[in-house]
Image 1 (tube, rainbow, N blue to C red):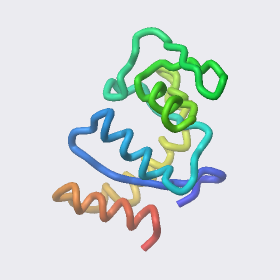
Image 2: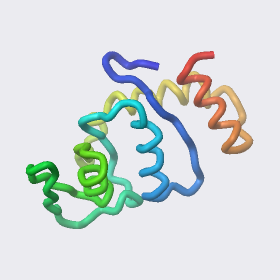
Image 3: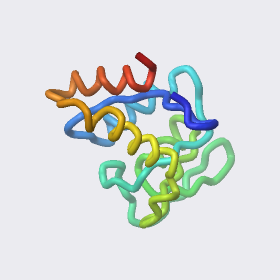
Image 4: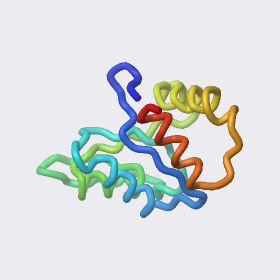
Length: 128
């Protein structure tokens, strides 16, 4: 599924997300194609650092706000960009996708477990 120049490349679900689970999802999503940037929210599971940490990657200094940003820079050479606090429009494409997914799919079915939800999401994103 594409939203203008953006496209959904990976979907997965879990009841208990952790930093290591998020890192594995990023590995799975970027197996074929390495992005330059990853926009993410400020959820506590990604390891907020409290103050910015400077990491040197390929001779460039990168400012990181979370453990996820540090991991992205050091292991994947990807710049993590956290959305600003209290700015829901900063990630409008994802918010639009989430709203459309909820209205078109999730409001119309009963989801019994993670496996069913994963199947429904994959079918929606990759077409029936």
